[in-house]
Image (cartoon, rainbow, N blue to C red; front, side):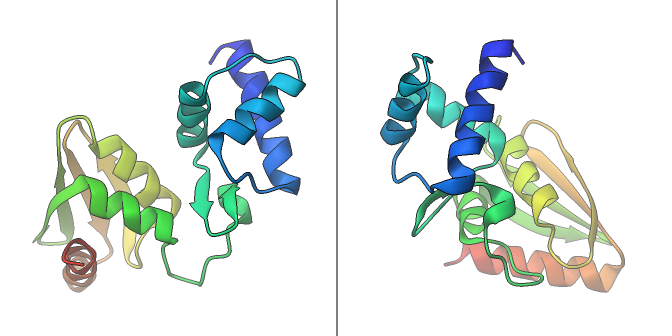
Length: 151
């Protein structure tokens, strides 16, 4: 990561710790006020790289998001619904398929908020393996993910 990227992301994080931002444009404006010229597209990429979530109050840092124990935030559910095409159990592993190039986006969310029973996530280009604690756990995880996809 370049020094400019790091400074920009540090400023975004500092701002979001005290003020949820309502839009990417408002964040770009905040950055300009602090001497950093940027575009909405760059802010969007920064927010994704930082794992920033969009909730009813605006953009917030993932550590600031209120999460029920064992529950994925709505932003994670949205990522899964948007990118996962299929989910299938294979013994104690759950295999997810995405469009080419989308597996890493989903894997980041699953690493951040793993479903109960998941002990590891491995992503390729369009495939994700979720290692679980048992065959029963894999069945439950696959069922939960398939339930998310069908909504």
